[in-house]
Image (cartoon, rainbow, N blue to C red; front, side, top):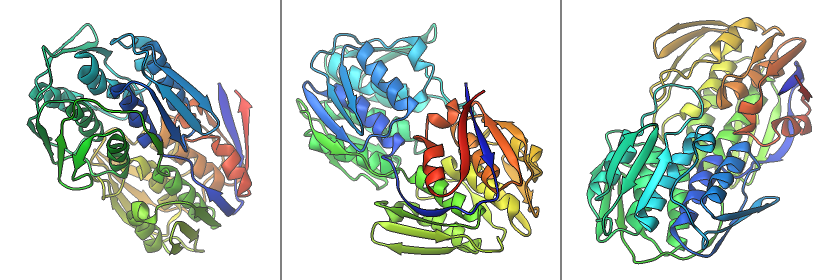
Length: 418
């Protein structure tokens, strides 16, 4: 297993382009199951989660060929409606094949998903939404078994919480259902909008993406399409916070500033300089970091995927910051590593209070999950001396060659075998 060796104390400076969004690519790959023929995807990040999803598709009989930043998916040869446990347990997003398989094959058997251990993430909303479309679903022996006798039927579906995955799975199934489906209180995340745009290129009739109600008029068939995945706002936010915590200056090109509005506002509140010009964002860290309050919320609120990173940054603020996590109650697994590096953090259930310190110290820490691992990398960049972050296989699930990107900005970071 690999680890990062990081020598902290060097301001990050330079320009970078952000990769395609992991959280848009995974559902778009699943959406390719809805049609026969070859779909062409561009700006696809090279991540272990993407590799896993391609393997899931291949186990279903689908061809998924990668070359650099492109993936060609030929789903004409779909030969199976059951996904293997050994792959699905690695990644939660693999449940996104449930809706497409049910719509196209009228049957699906999908293992209950795994992924990062950041709290309870039940699939109840996925299953209840599909039931309302006419599917018969049972959960037994660790598998979700779903069937539909003839065709899925359009329905009104209300989501108690705007779940990204549930919105996508229901939307997939509804594209080939008879009649109209209304999804009320859907996720408005940019990645969901990107998935909807891909489906529309395939011939789906979808309206209202990015609003509080999605309308999907079912069609008889969908067709292969070409699509370029949107930039990854989580990677972008992580890199911008790396600039702030190291008192550096980073410019990100070909990015969507609108999707970063709340994180840019928080960085400004902390004293950073922030400039936005069309598809370019420049952030320069200030000499003094100011404390802030952050509460994670569904988009357009502050993303839970950036909470561990901002928690790390405020460790060096002059004063007390509060971070409240409302999405995943266990998304504080990075705190143990931060404390080991000298951070002063007190947790009470879903809220942490961070008393800023003048500096972080070197330490050997372990990445607990994707975003928690990234947070500890940020801490290593700012800490005095040489730190190591172990088990970075977690980080590789969400960041493509993070050490190379950071090195281009002047970081002293190296990947080594542990």
